[in-house]
Length: 47
Image (tube, rainbow, N blue to C red):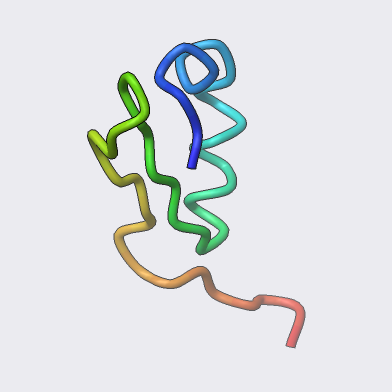
């Protein structure tokens, strides 16, 4: 979970984490407001 202010300040960083498969929940005034996740699971190209 991350607050809306922190999310706005580090939007690109949270996008990268979501693209890597992590689910990000953004809160406003302590209440869940939105969820950011990848469209599809990340592919492991190293394998």
